[in-house]
Image (cartoon, rainbow, N blue to C red):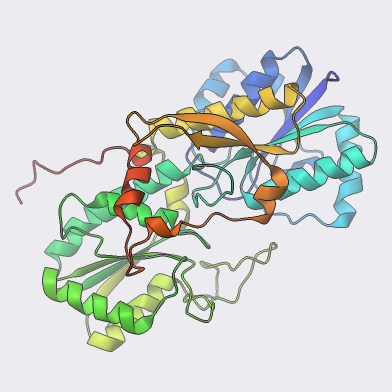
Length: 398
């Protein structure tokens, strides 16, 4: 491999642990004899276009150490959709900085960005290796058991529903229902994680709505009525991207981002939780609450999982290792090799960027209850080692 410089960027929504991946890349690159300067893109690929780059070789070690457990995206993020006119100026900047190693941390759209830029550069005779580092709280990246960031966001959701469940139980004579909405455009991994809040039968959440199953109004209302009659209140968790049988979003939002994805929390639109609240209130005349925390679950470091930090950092380091071995056009993946999760163990593998960019990973059928509004034991076996044990409020007078 040629000696040259490296560049790393972050893209898309943040997570609690995305900076752990960043420092994994930076530290591994700085230690390499094949890599000279390690640059950071300010605001993703926009930083390359605008020549806004940071030199990590000039960053104090203490700063790098602290960044490992700092939430959100330290370099700044972007959702710029690459157009044909972007490629030539991007390559010009990469050549000017002698970039031979290209790393980005992100989700599907980010992997597509890496793939297209590296393919273009190589097609123009510029030898450059590109490796992606997985990141998304949605947990919907193809080719990996799970993604860094999901575990911490899942714990945030589970703890919110656990503690909110106490409130809902005590306030049932005032509010007969609550609807908690998670992010997740087309996959239900995050709302499903709310099931970890249950300590015993009957605990919230009572209903979990997933984008993998169509929202059937009549079935939903029947279950709402049943759960409220049984428990005195009903706790509902929904993914923001749940859809009607015809494929239209329950949120009814028409606003889209630059990648043509529906902006479920966008100004001018409504949220799925708001619509569900309206449906229940109109049907039963009940008072209730809807809770939409949006990006808070992406950056709540007080609820982050230690395992998540560890795996995010390892994925960053592995990306550099792969590039130095001559690998390119791949994303680092995590492969679960433990049987029965005892003990939980993963190995790092690879997945072609083209596969990740063009596919999403919904929850498999074996993780979804027959009703379509809950999860199975198989899912709990999958998610429990990632989320970790939740506090049990034994000291509370219940």
